[in-house]
Length: 334
Ligand code: GLV
Ligand code: GLV
Image (cartoon, rainbow, N blue to C red; front, side):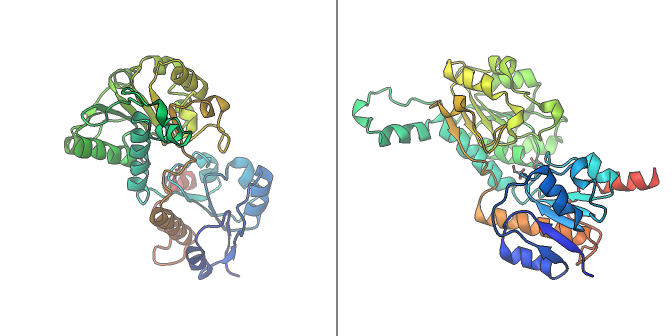
């Protein structure tokens, strides 16, 4: 019999049809919210799964899935996967890096500009009919060109934002990362490595682009926010859990931070009322990678990963962006 795969959400039909060349596909016609039990039940009957960041897959979900060999995440961040649990079960996990880098960097820059120049706030004010109240000091924001851009997490997306800032807007770029980048990469943008506290203190605009791990939970808390300039902008396009949202809302409400742009939240799809009540925060619904071309590219890469991880197609056994082949091999020999 042909291997069976489950696709958790409606994606792009032509890509799902590609899976159909190799597998019996259990597709999903409606956008669906799954409980852990639902996911476990789906995984129990299949060899592979194509999922999004809304589906959590950990030890409990794979415990009854003896036939499951591959989970392909449509997204670059994979904090919805318990990689150790998947590796222990011999399940190949994959994500979709690279294809979304530039699109996500674009959105980060858009949020930075919208927040610092008060674009959505201005539009709301105009639509509310308040323009008659205009004064010379209406909607004064903070400059982007020539300012200091801070980047926390200098992966591919962080480097994309650094290029936009340095080459497009003449910004001075500072970054903090687990490790320093090679000099050649720093040289392209003039990006300078600094400690976390220096980054907070010196950035006019700070963009968060680091992966979420439990160690990074609420990295940007009240103490960190207190180290930032009151004129600064904070942008988060990574994961909501990196920021203490109550502390952020408090800083924004009390003039200790000028503005913020958020694409990600702790309780997605719920957004805290404290944030919704503020005018100086731009809020988007996790659309970092949401361009038509990029979303297609992500699904295409996830499909390639799944086909290869299940031993089919031109890359059989060599999924282009597997996350845990080394861990699985180490488990077999160790
Ligand atoms: C989206 O947040 C992703 O990780 O791809
Ligand atoms: C994260 O993986 C990135 O591409 O920045």
